[in-house]
Length: 467
Ligand code: PA5
Image (spheres, rainbow, N blue to C red):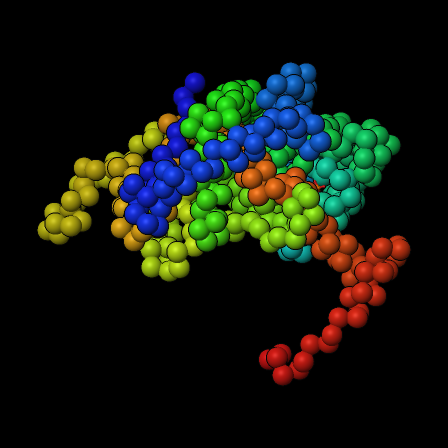
């Protein structure tokens, strides 16, 4: 298997001087890292660490997914995911990484499956625009929500249910597939009552750790992605990270670097893929990193405010928008480049403009050379400015390397959470806003009514601050 590689040299004092991480600082973390590793391993497959089992325990599930995917691809022109957060970001990232960059715009004969739409917002214009571009009679909807009650997803379900009934009558059940918890929430009850085909999200797999379960695998299989390759890549990364020695475990090493970087005040993690195919990997990473590590209390109940703010960027595009800040602004960032060694296309630059030497110079080279040259240029500019950066190289973007990358970041997140001594698997700060939104909508239940009262007690804003 082609393995992804981490080059962290530009994080280290050896290259960066006093702004970097020293060998002594790494050595000082050996014990903490080993105990984080032990904690993560002790909880493997338990509590909310069911995601660590996913590369190993889904044989039957994968067969069902592949069978469903064949049926869907044969019957429908479009496959629409209704979901948000962890139920949407993984499917989006994997689709962008592994299929044609303009997949939906390809003619049907050139696509391995139906068009894919992932509807992860409730902008009122968005649903109307979706309905303008799909034919309900030829569309399959995958309603994904672990809790089975998320307002955004379930409101979309109600709209689609109504539209489907009008368009296809009693046949609507064939157009809906549910992915949810087997035992908890309302959606499983609805699915059982209606008889929808259903896939389960294992109890110990939280939204942002769910791409490698049916949440992500079904949409991937429907669009022709090799889901076995994704899981094989994840398994390979898991096996590669089987040591408590930070120099023997790439994810543990990375977690230690990020932990030390945070201690040094680098509270921003910039994810900068130099490949359009990996652009949405930054969105997926942003949720994983932000929701897992942004916490205000340790496991032992000590108040803290920890976390590192993820920033989503794209090379080279954002060299022309954010790089100025990264090289000259505050020393508060780690920049992680995602580099692709072998792109799936070669784009030569033809000769031309022979009278203008700086432009003529580009002729005979390729975009493949130029994008890597620009990445190296950015890497060098950051180094010269004393800024921490690191590079994760994918020999090629394929199911196995993407599976490795996903699992790598999941492990890094779990280890970092353990070092920060927080619960990396909950999201109480998100729950608060969900309750508040239902309260604003006027829902009457003890908790929502109380929240409405609490919100009413907020001081009124002053008119002089409103323009
Ligand atoms: O990571 C998480 O658990 C969350 O971000 C969820 O994915 C998100 O809130 C959606 O929840 P649900 O899948 O229950 O609809």
